[in-house]
Length: 186
Image 1 (cartoon, one colour):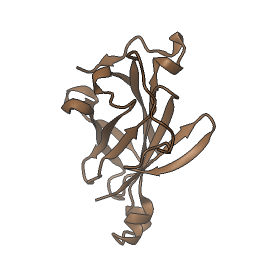
Image 2 (cartoon, rainbow, N blue to C red):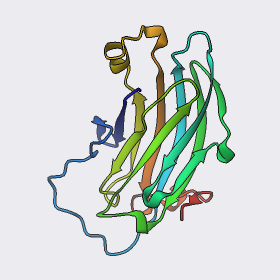
Image 3 (cartoon, helix red, strand yellow):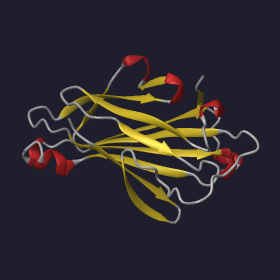
Image 4 (cartoon, rainbow, N blue to C red):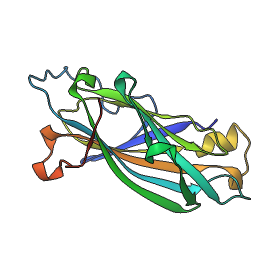
C-alpha cells in the first residue's frame, strides 16, 4: 500500500497537509451562509513520473472519485483506462458540480483514488472547508519516503504519481470562471 499526501495552494502561499487534515485552521468562528452557492471540483491533471515497475514503463490508469451521499464517478467514463508512460501527464480538465445539499458547515469531503494495474494506492482524502471564503487547488502525491523506508523498495520500484484538482465556488469566481460543461452530481 502506498500512503498519500495532499497539498493545497492558496493565492497567499503553499502549505502541506496530511491526507485527512483540514486545509485551514479551525480557530476562526464558523461562517453562516444565508443562501446556497454553486460548488465545483475540477480534476485537472494526472502525472506519472515513475510507475515503480521497471519492466513495464507503460501503465493503465483510471480515477475513481467518491463524493458525499455515496455518489461515485470514474474517469475516463465507461470503466476505461488511460494508457500512460513514465514521465508523462494526462490532462483531464473535467469539472463536477457538487449539489449544495452535499455541503455541510460550509464544506464537504471526498476521496480520489488513482487506480493503476499493478499497484495498490490508498485514496487521497480531501476535507474542504470554508468554501464560501476562497477557492483553492490541491496536489495529491504518493509518499516516496514511506515506500523507500517502510516497504524497503529500491528507488526504481517507487511509484511517483500525482493528481491536481481545483475546488471553487461561484461566490469567489467571476462568471467567466464558471464552466458551462460541468457535470452535475445528483
